[in-house]
Amino acid sequence: MLDLIHYINLDENLKQKVIDLAHKDRVNIMSLADKCKNGNFSSLALKSDLTRLAVMIECLGYTFEKYKQYSIDEKIFSDTVDDIRIWCENNGNKGLKNYNWIKNHISFELFKIGRLQYQLVTIKNKLLKYDLLPFDYGEKVIYVHIPQGERLAYSDCVQSLKCAKEFFKKHFPDYKYRFFFCESWLLYGDNQKFMMPQSNILRFSSLFHIAYSIDADSQAIERIFGKRHINKKKYKENTTLQKNAKKHLLNGGKLGIGIGFIDKESI
Image: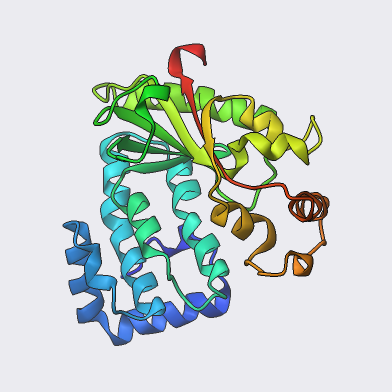
């Protein structure tokens, strides 16, 4: 059990706890893992965070076999599944709470290639403004995610996109898509009002054609400040980004989400 745990740089105490649980509750962990491999991740809904972690790591055997079947480099596997560590750290190293995100990795639908993550997605979001987008409802895209924990260097992102284009051409030749797509606070149009022109965030957003923005600030508040305060004066000012964003908000500015795309032929 947990044969591939070494691919995830878990906190040592958490690693030992999950190994102990896996041995103690072997039958249950294996049963839940079988359900998840068949797409039934809802079976984890009422389980403990530690059990969820043990099950997802157990499922990695299935995922690893898919990587070998598609001849995908082991480093991409390692980089991709190490996202489990990040979400465990976000949960105070108590286990895995956000299993609904990690199921994308387990299901062989999401890959970390260099700095960025890429997900095979058929767009079915009825809230998108398709009249402003170059693709239609039901069309396949490559969804771009920006994992936390690393500097968002422009050159790294450019290289990641180039490698991703070649990756999908090589390993998923039958997956027909035209665009890379991203919904993120990093692409919000008003960010330029409080960020320096050469900031990593604005340079990253310049890679995309920004179709439109929406004033939904939950993601930005979480990523910049950690949590929301009704009194904006209580927001932290430990970083330059926090200081500038707080000043922006106190002056009546807004945070939100930008909707952007990249034509793969332009990469």
